[in-house]
Every structure is written in C-alpha cells, then in structure tokens.
View 1 (cartoon, rainbow, N blue to C red):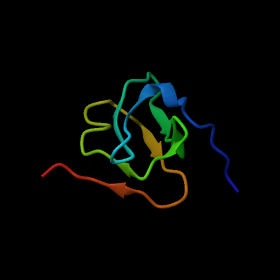
View 2: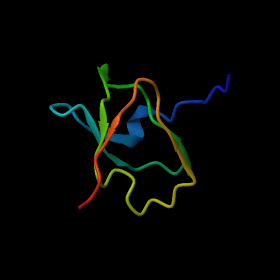
View 3: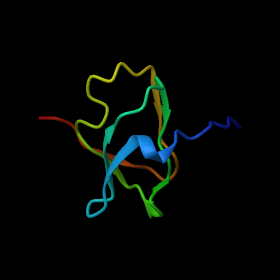
Length: 71
C-alpha cells in the first residue's frame, strides 16, 4: 500500500457550504488533497481549483470526490 503525505490544509481555499476545495495556493507541485479542511469533509473539487498551477500530480483521498469541470 502506498502512503502519501497530505498537503497542509492551509494551502487550500474551502467553500464550507459546498464542502468544496476552490483554490490551491501552495508551492508543492505534487499535491495530496486532505480529507478534511477545518474539520469538515471535502466532497468536491472546484472547476478552477488547480487551474494554471503547474502541478505534476494530484492525489485524492477516499472516498471518491466530485470533480467539477470548466464548461
């Protein structure tokens, strides 16, 4: 089993109403999304959360997330 070090939640902007990560402002290019931010379960990723960030990889924790896409 692979283990990943979760990226610090302070680098994620979080919409508590939708329980959605809406932006990432960290420097890491390999991101592991935390299962909870501010004690609330993250259930989706916003359509522009990682837009133009130059990331190499993004790892999602269990359970499965909703990933919203830009139309």
